[in-house]
Image 1 (cartoon, one colour):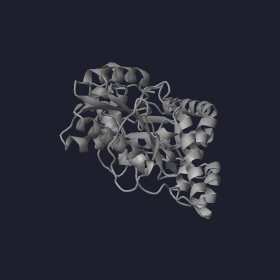
Image 2 (spheres, rainbow, N blue to C red; image 1 turned 90 degrees about the vertical axis):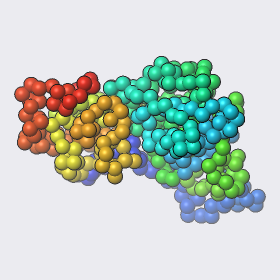
Image 3 (cartoon, helix red, strand yellow; image 1 turned 120 degrees about the vertical axis):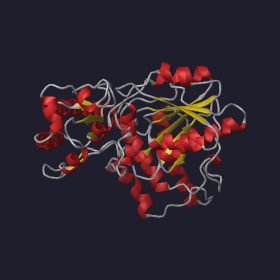
Image 4 (tube, rainbow, N blue to C red; image 1 turned 30 degrees about the horizontal axis):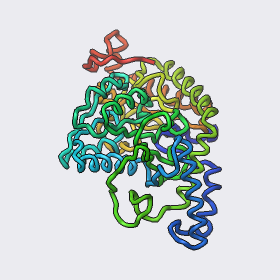
Length: 409
């Protein structure tokens, strides 16, 4: 970014393609990319590139290459994991109940809703006001018929990171399968399936500087986790995901994951410093509510602005690329389901921003974003009756009609 160009703070929605990723993909985009399933030399060359990418993704998780299944992204991986595992378990008489969190990504929640139409039952565990969910709350939701629990490693709207190890211990002790949506985790929080007994893990390339349109699903082989496929056709990906493997895209994902692993420590320090700077700048605005926890993933900050109309605020943020809630729901006028589940009243949920940081983000960009947001919020509060009441000493809870604990930055 330049000092005068737009400030991009929407890395949780998508990340730019890394230069080294583009270089890795270039030969497969400009030259002949053979079909990896073909037996001739061109096909074998493509298959070798796919195998290398598969090994890179597996290595980042502490997994084996034969446990990685290519998909079109984390949404498809979520669908394959949840529907495929639940249907397989149910067909063998092991149960028909799923547990997930009320704050999960729509791909997870919609997959669960689809299974409800087939006769499954689903428990959606509500979060605390800071977005956290304890292992005890997850365990309490499980029943004798629970076959699968699905949680995210990093919440895509708030950045909240659950105690996966504690949740996994409860789930495995119960005998159910554990699915983890890790789309926001690569390069940001540690995730190692050799130590974490997750059975299924969803990944996305474009969240970690890779190409859009490709992702992967980790499927544990020991003990073996079996899935019913969503698609039928060829025998690619062990029959779980038929169709010709897109060589350029999976090569790009392999390169992107390798980049994230290589730069994890450096990027982590960079993001932590920027997040601290962003929170400090927002605190100077005054009266800003934190939606989430300070110990969450270092790349996501979600805040609400009391006394401000959400649509009016969005209209004043020229030059900023930020998200109201999650990018996947940007076209939906309803308030974020995540913030609603956390007990935020609709007016505050509407007046919220998700600002997400990336490796290319600079301190100057953070400062510019804070200045633009501060000016917009100050302007709107200047003629806001709600802000006048708050400035006169009324509490946010009384003005907005909620008992939910709210934490100012």
